[in-house]
Length: 156
Image (cartoon, one colour):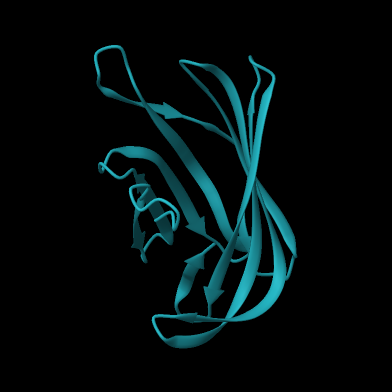
């Protein structure tokens, strides 16, 4: 939820398949409409992106899936790399897009969630969306926090 506008909410449904080491994240807007999906596989070296889709409304008002081509696949690496990237390319009704997420480990931070304090690994996540046909680039970042044996615990 956006702390400045409580109507701006998104929901994530994350499911895992321990037999295949696959994770699937489905993202929903505040009206529970799917706006993207994100598929990963957990390997010996880390988490890798296997598929990414955006969704848009077609002229008939139906939600249409836009499958992306995975270019860079590193979602997370176990081997201590401090920086890694995943990126995809796709075409929707507005044109061609390159989407990239670069993650940089930025240290350990103590955070409190629901009154309990945790030692969390902090990352700076930079998102870059380039609309190739319009020569427009959007950049934004977020900080994400992960706690051992829990996983992602907070976004800021």
